[in-house]
Image 1 (spheres, rainbow, N blue to C red):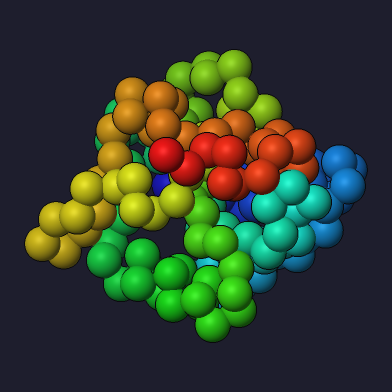
Image 2: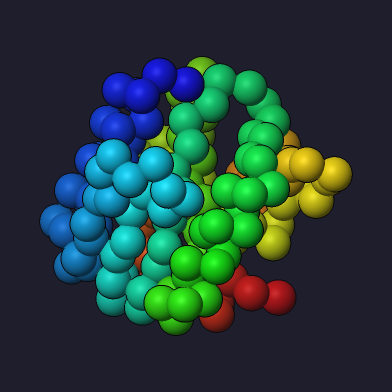
Length: 138
């Protein structure tokens, strides 16, 4: 993934949330595990790691997931991953799938999720401002 493509996606997400009643900030150049921190009317505080990947599987290093969940826990925020697969038109807002890290399969050094599972189990970005996260939990 190029830095520019990822940064553009983060900016799109922040702009979308602000335009739809939420508040968000991009943690630019942090080199950390959280790209966007937001308050979404329907879900409360959310810490988001943004990923733009061309593959049909998203691999995230273990330390990234641990960093995201640790940050979210300390800030009492919901950890989420926003995945934008640029080679597929999902029909979702911003062409992005949002899901909690616990949907990913844990491997030795990474976590992984395939596009089909993410589309079936994940949520649309618009849900951050329209429906509570509890309505998606089983």
